[in-house]
Image 1 (tube, helix red, strand yellow):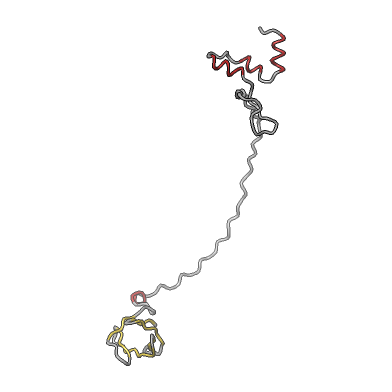
Image 2 (image 1 turned 45 degrees about the horizontal axis):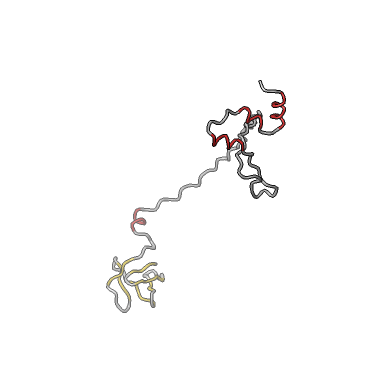
Length: 148
């Protein structure tokens, strides 16, 4: 057992009880290290108050306190009303898919008055970059191509 005076002294000094409970260091270096004061900061907090010093003993972790677990219900999400889809547009015919109405057409047999298209229809010149189709539409011409 420990003498009563030593026990009172250990309780009065912080960290003394931990030192008393720790096993005695084996090597001379460890004994010298154990004699050093615990590291603390100076008054300005920029440097150590005393050097050399030793690290503070490890603290016991704080006991965890129970906290009630609160599980809230998920909010009820109302579904949006069903909306009727609009009717699908009529599908284009195969002829329209193969020959779109605004697709560029190749020209050939061009002369001073105009050119012929692939079907042999004559298209009249109307000025730089423009031609007039047989139906009277003004179309754009780019080299050997025309687009209405």
